[in-house]
Length: 270
View 1 (cartoon, rainbow, N blue to C red):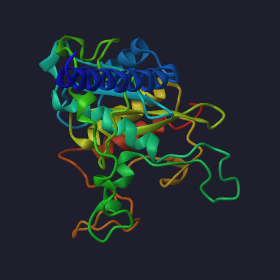
View 2 (tube, one colour):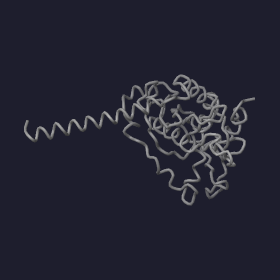
View 3 (cartoon, helix red, strand yellow):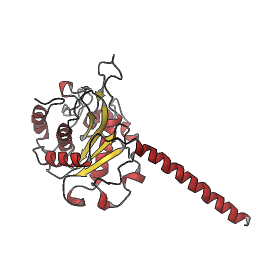
View 4 (cartoon, helix red, strand yellow):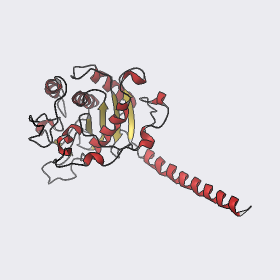
């Protein structure tokens, strides 16, 4: 074998080894992928939530769940067919789920902290990341991994074999629709992200979805007894008195939200 052929063969062998290691590492991630919900449960909860009075445009929705490691493990849609809901919202829903999980804490990790087990919804981040906000620039961290976000057969999108499953898609989203998932012990199990309507309606629908899944035992949040609920406190100049506020959207989503948190409070419902 001449030197050129030998070099080519060695390069191909090294590339194959690197791919094998990449696959092995990815498979390791998949083996850790314990999902807090099933695809069927997520789809049922999403369809039920979307059909209720949430404000917004009344559009169909995408929902994604990540586990506590930030790995997508369930993706669902409320409408029939791929384009019954905004296609771009599929990846946004995963981004919201990743964000809510990535910036929420499990209970008991900081027992002396005033906000032990603090949950931050994506809605809570809006004002904090604006210029002059306490978390300005956060939205540019943890970019979406486009290799996984857009991979695969579109016919599988929203099914139990959605190509994003088993992948850490990442991304940081800073408007309503992402909520952390907690069990009765206050343990962070992952998060759900919902997208497809106004960001305020997205939050309302995500709240209903989490309540239906019975994974809303939020230990602490910036909205007091309402945990990680959206905070509508922006003034005429768009400034949040609280520092973690969110703008109102196109209609009465804020009014709908006030009713939703009464009928579906965090933790055990009455």
